[in-house]
Image (cartoon, rainbow, N blue to C red; front, side):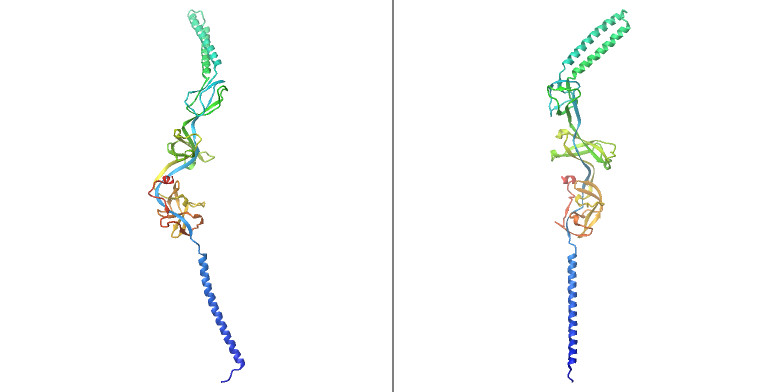
Length: 380
């Protein structure tokens, strides 16, 4: 063998170095590729959407009623301003605010001295003319008085009698009486005051019958009729409910407001008073076996009625057709079936197809009690 020259040794060494370098590069690329795949998997896991926590309730069947609810103050059915029909000094004021009065009862007595004298004068004139007429009648039989003079005496007598009736009426005006039965709501007179003719001195309200006038949207005009029951609650008498009836319904719709008037009547002997602000509920229809969901499940996005229904672990926007509304419940006519869970809390964070996590007892979410009382009773 021939010994290798220095040049040959150098070439061999360079060849080995390049091979080692290529091997190291290959190992580095393999390591980088493996690390990249693991990183991508971690990123994908980090980017996966988290499940949105929600609360749900199940659609269930129960009784539901349709009703209209409105607010209006109570007013007395009858109210009267008491005025004097004559002028004079008030000698006696016989009633005060809060007292009950009956129609025809004397409230004030006014000084009538002048009227008494006028009545006496008119009565004397009548008696004088009656005597003259009787004598003239006898003379007329003897043809000593003309028919014309007899007629004139008769006309004078009739005029005097009319003046007597006027004097007696004026005398009667000294007693100011109540035009209606009710309660004295205000008094603007004291004993000794001078009373002006036709000036209001009392206000009387009849609290035995009270009314509340509702301005109802025209879409309800075919549903509300006279005689239907009305339930009333007032803040001043919390915890109590009062029963009434629709007394009358206006036959026309106001073109400006698009409403019509519904007047409800209530018994004022139950503690109700004019001026109390009341909430009226008129029930006009009922279904004994309706599919209902909580009102809170409805989406409030301005679109057609819809809910987020659970399909597995995802929330799916589901259009529905609504029926009656009864307190916290709404009837579903189509789009859901009994037992379908719908989201009632957490809707704001959901989108169609969002993953969800049901809070609470997922196996038995909140639902309407199909065997319980009506929704109106549940609401109470």
